[in-house]
Image 1 (cartoon, each protein chain N blue to C red):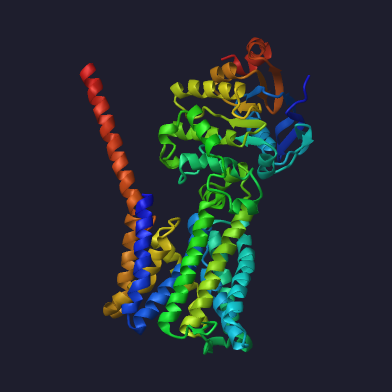
Image 2: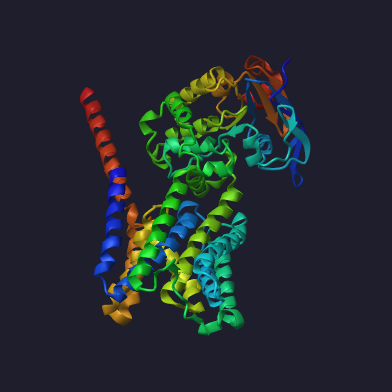
Length: 252
Length: 328
């Protein structure tokens, strides 16, 4: 078995008397799409925020490609190859779509000093254009991101997470607020990006999503969380057939 | 759009080179003041307009630059040494003033910088042994380049023009480099920026420090221009005026400060006929501008474009709906 890209062990986080995450462990393998599902309040977001350096866990460890990254902030995680999307739209509204993509990777090139003298697109123009074509947003690439429709901005947001050729991409509800016809499109895109990565370097994904069809269709493995604990981890088929999961979550 | 930009700049440049030769002394003084404030507000535009850091302390940096040059000249040192020192001073102080911005933002940051401005003003006013207190410092000399004296008002004007152009080009280069995008990213969405590896702490501090350098150089040039400075020039009121210039011109627009400074420096002169009513007229004009063009004068073309686009989009929707209606 090859070494995992992400290894979370015994992660715990409490807010006062409330234990949001109570000892969660799992591993994500290279190239794997790993889904995290669970009812509201099951600790998904707390788990995600810990992995993203937004909050520091009380106990447990997070390893990225064998290196301990527990407690590192978002900036450091980005430098170590973690890309992410947000639940709500987070694009740079007054920059063009293309510039949004370029700024998403430019800080990974050279030093701050050398960037002062680098060309405006940091030599990332081609990479940005390739992603623009894959995401089919060529016709709006020159527009300010803030002027686009919600769905288009969502696509820009996802594309940005892939610009820096990350090892791991954390997708926080990529389908939230997206109209059903685009959900299929996003799924196809993500599968394609997983199978044919732009750089030849394969990314692993961790996806939090409430849209069950989307998760079952997209993910290789799924972890079900209930009340801050792992209820089950398995392939979509295994999860569908799991009695406990059906009772606790999928049943209705 | 790009051609228009270049043509516009060429036109402004031609105007700046030729016009003062027709002006009398007072006119030249106005033009020079305008340029000085262009330099100062270019810096503030970087801090406020591009990087989104609400600073109400810019006049303090302007003052630090002015007093540095005045003191150096008083002790018989060269203007050409004084100006770089003024810039370095402002860079360092700018870094320190940027510190609160790492903790607080928006109106809270504005108040923190306002406090800094007041503190600096008190130093200028109270430390009489150094700054001359409320009497200020006078007889600030004008520099010369070798044997070329810049004592004359027109000659000094052209010196300031050269500085304006060089500082403008440097800023343009910086904004076109990846730094410009990083600053804009910091302004538009700092949390997203950080998640993409943009070191928001460093860029925040640098936006203050570089902005302060522009104010410092402008202040140094201003000291030699008017040859007399006192603390009243560097109050919080002056900072607010500079902020207003940036906002009126269009924050985040490269040429915004050119227009904004004209409004802040030249317009009051034109409104002299209104005498006591001047501030009323000026204030009303600003209120109206903020209602109709909250992103400043230079946002007008973008506004019109956006309006045209939305009109076209709605026309397209209507057409689509009618076509579907025919099919049905």
